[in-house]
Image 1: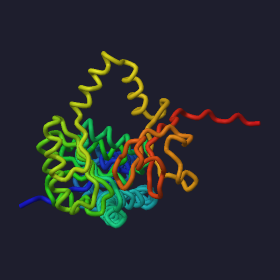
Image 2: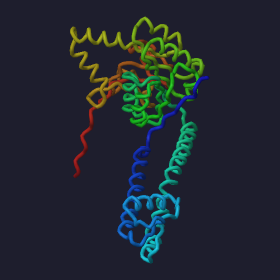
Image 3: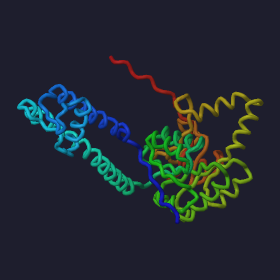
Image 4: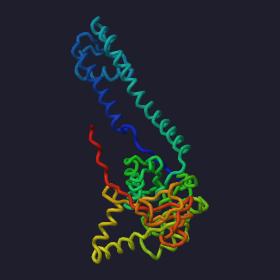
Length: 343
């Protein structure tokens, strides 16, 4: 039988061990306070053995009294001892019970709170981005999404490695533990209502299975972007349903080759891919004032144009004038702007 997917929400509270440790410290402190009070007034207590109250008897009386066991073999007989039992030991007993019951109630309350958060998360999870794999490529993809302005609540990580799951939740992301090759896991990720699926699997074989499963569940309506280690697997990934395939090894190899023949190009590429360093690639829709103009006549440095979902090169007759719905890919100044000085 297949186990259901486990959804891990970002932590917003202190760990259970810390909360339990604090309660344990308070409970032990109450025990030592009662022991001190009883032993300092040991003459006011009577033991059935009539051999006096020792330090061990004081500990025994404190434990059985705070736990409301009360065997009755040690009893307060003097007015002072009975007064101390009324004003100190009885309130301590109530506090001790609150600590014990409070621990159980907190566990139940935390489970209820988690269920409420899961229900709310499932209701509002729409137009999100599913990142399958939280390794080096997956983390880099998430960082790029965050740098481009995507909110953490709209990013969902699917990963089978528990260590990677902990890293994702520590970064404030919702994560589902399980293999993205399984339809049940992607269904739990609400892939049918997603905006895009990023496949950053550890192997090309897994990437192909994930792309196939995502395409089957979404019927091709959700954009799928996949990473491949080998260029020969890129066509297979596209046949499996990936709209775009990025070959990591081939891209890295080309950059390594260019680094020896044309080193400045590497600096330009690195600048374009690093946010806040200088230049950055960006895409935007053509404004109403720009319709009918040539992309080369715009104030921005336009390097490509997107028409009807297809990237077209500049200079063709069809791309000489901007039309309604066109998008332009341009180079944006991404340097941090100096704050204006107060007048």
